[in-house]
Length: 282
Ligand SMILES: Nc1ncnc2c1ncn2[C@@H]1O[C@H](COP(=O)(O)OP(=O)(O)OP(=O)(O)O)[C@@H](O)[C@H]1O
Ligand SMILES: [Mg+2]
Image (cartoon, rainbow, N blue to C red):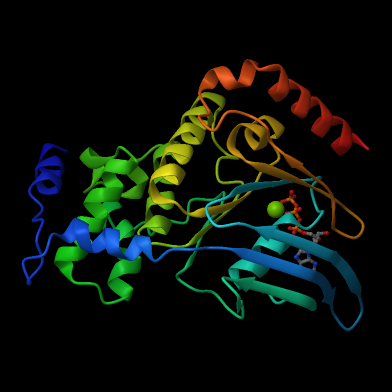
């Protein structure tokens, strides 16, 4: 473990041209937007024998650097919607654009984090984080700077050389987030990323995610079953209903921008939770 820490700290900070590698990273981030526009989206799953309308008439815009959460009953189409935005699933009708460009397949500008740990078990933490940049052909030096940066962000510098099986659930999920962020996505699509974690770890992860979101300036579209999590994290909560999957209502979260744990005790926080709870019950 000590060796891992030393390697992380000893990483060089200049590229071949003598430029600061951190400065190179910052240049890339500054070109960022990340506006999602979904209009008239419907999704029908069809086989020879059956036809199932999973989503109907979905209209949703997510602004640059906005944090939007989707809640709704099981089976209402949340994951389907996210997979379509990710380009992993096809829509039946409608249009999804990212910064005005139609989404027609997966792309590095959209990072995905799922509930299951989708790390490569045969790669170390650092190698997992560097995986995307490596595919893009980014130099070893720059990759090292990127992984150093994100190891620090997720506070796992001392686990750089550990393998996923040596990590706890929360740690694995932190690496999954770092791995998605290492591609410098404009948008982070998260499908119940903390669903499998214990209550305490979940709270820690939520705070870490908000820190990352503020620092990295990505747009986040986040799915959860947990109303408390939705209100705590987001600027807007979208409530979906089933049969077929559709948007029932959207709520602006009127809470302080700085989400400290005390925010959970504010009357506005409790009132919104109550309202969402009632809407989801019916
Ligand atoms: N490949 C598929 N073929 C046919 N039906 C599907 C397929 N994928 C999903 N569905 C159906 O579409 C509906 C929406 O599924 P989806 O996984 O999007 O729901 P969800 O809101 O994410 O639910 P959960 O909260 O349980 O994760 C479900 O009724 C599901 O059975
Ligand atoms: Mg789902």
